[in-house]
Length: 83
Image: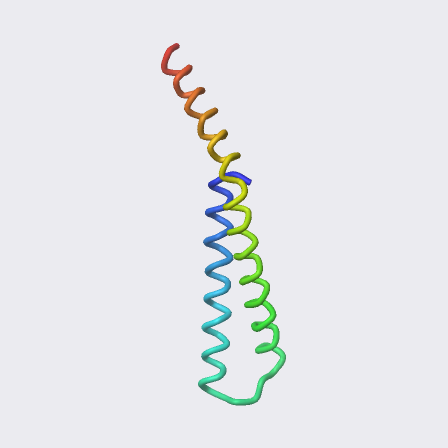
């Protein structure tokens, strides 16, 4: 996974988690009985939180790969400027 791909996925999953959390809090404020939509929102919130934890795990263990990728990119930029 590239650094840009990580950032994009992290932002999208964070937005989804916040939206599901806001929906659940809103439904708890308005009414007390849970319907199917509330349970689906809770499931999506758990899924999003789990995926965010996974992305943080990937970030921690792919740091070396990202450094190598940046070194290759800098090498290509240096070669391009030398031409």
